Image (tube, rainbow, N blue to C red; front, side, top):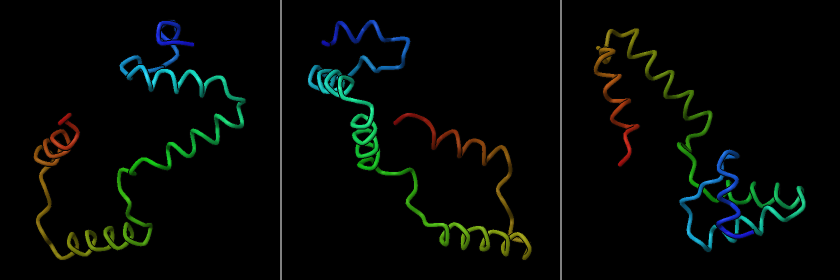
Length: 93
C-alpha cells in the first residue's frame, strides 16, 4: 500500500502528514499479523517519553505537600489564574 492508498483511510484516523518513508513503514506494519502489529505498537509507544515520569510515591508526596500547605493557610492560585496557566501549558509551541 502506498501513500495514495492510505489517503482512502482518512476516516480511520491515519495521519496523512507523515513522510513517504513513514507512510511506507505504516503500510508494511499494517500488513503484519495482529500479534506482530501489537508488539510493534507496544514497542513504539514505549519509545516515546511519557507526559510525566513521576512515580506513585512521588505523586503521593506532592499531594501530601499540597495538603499540608492548604491546612497551614498557604495562599492558593485563583481559578482564573490557574485556568490561564493550564491553557498556556496546553498551547502548541
